[in-house]
Image (cartoon, rainbow, N blue to C red):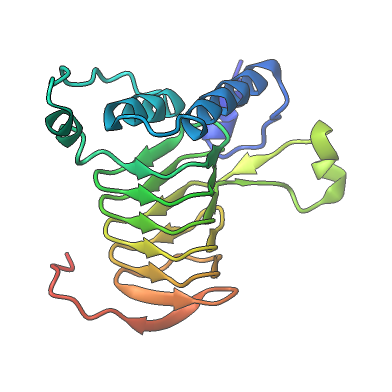
Length: 210
């Protein structure tokens, strides 16, 4: 029999309040709380705490007795400014050099990926979870939910308070203006602004567009 988690990850209708998924969200909530309350700790500890959220069990490099050199070992790891709010954690994929500014919210019902060197401003929300429009089907917490993957390409800039909705892909090198609501895919190397977000202009760059 197909589990609710399997249906969730495939973008099918699923029930979120089964014990398995309630436990998954509770685990992530505890891990986020530990990260958000970590305070001024070494870079190594923040990487450990992020991997607890993300479910990444990759071993860390050996500790260097020189604190600066030890921190330098994690220079390509994502930089996440607390507080962070995530549903499951294990469905979030962050590339090297990504920065998430404070109060980022990620509803990772399905995969939410953010490509290398992308900068995400404060109070940005990325939603891969959604609900049926028919209220008879939606039925509050008794009804099903569903999801669509969200992908943000490499070298993007997502301005503060932007919202990226389920199923959206933001193309490589693009900029999403502050406060924008992105409802459709964004072509690579474009600036989009507004609600709903629309292309404002193309970005001139020396970067290889391929």
